[in-house]
Image 1 (cartoon, one colour):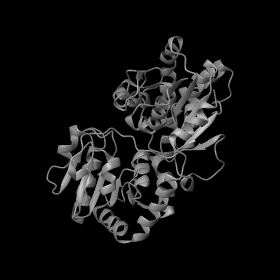
Image 2 (cartoon, one colour):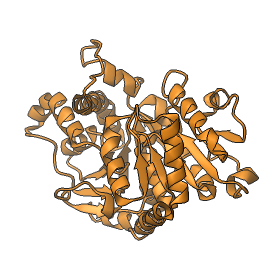
Image 3 (cartoon, helix red, strand yellow):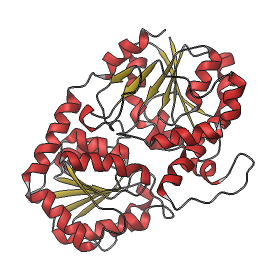
Length: 377
């Protein structure tokens, strides 16, 4: 069987798809994964064949309309969610022709699309093959789907559709206890979250618990000098007064500048699935992939959402008792130190985090979900 996996425009959209794609490849199926040019190295780095559908970045699709006119990011959080959906809709439109070109030579038997890869259901409809929607974190806002649907209305009309086709299978990574309220998606299939971020050669400190407490601070994989750099550097500085060993997970090209002037710090692109097992606490931007990885490790988290879409999942984890959340602007030095102390000293947060980790481990493995996917064809 030939299975086409569709990611998005950042490495964070690749990693959640890798376990199922790898299981499919190991089972003897032909697998390709597509995304924008900038993330193909993340796909190939995971050992999967990579296809570029656009030389543009995800930021290009967010900040330019389909005619190339510049767009401004909306200040209102609800408008932001629709805005993001429209951007992913424009990526879907731009991806269609390259994917149809692929299908002329390499016709997939099934299409698996990441949660915001809105080209997936439309491509599957055009090819007449099953479509699997695959989440990549603990919850994207439904408003994103509405924004994408607005953007793709001409494509719907062309295909005789009123909206996005219902997925033949919905693969869900979020543990059941932390799902948003409301009816479950049709054809729901839970799957165990498996960390799959890029690796590097291990050093002893990465798998060894230090004598003092260790706190990991991160803002995800998209940190550059122009994006999230100041946020992450400031956050590391706020954690420093706790006297713990600090691990700053960030791209290598910004790591040294991020930690200049800080003592007891390791920084760089880290194998977080390994390093997390030696940590006591994560302090981060509430990115969906990072949150899931820390949940799977059974650790408490101090969450500072840097995107409106991260607020609701963070609130659910906080209500569950496994984290604390500070909204942007609330993350003062005193608030960060106080939050970290509460999470470290009150054992209830670690206990609740371990409940989440146990629930994640109880979900079906990717190879088991693959058996369900195979039945669709």
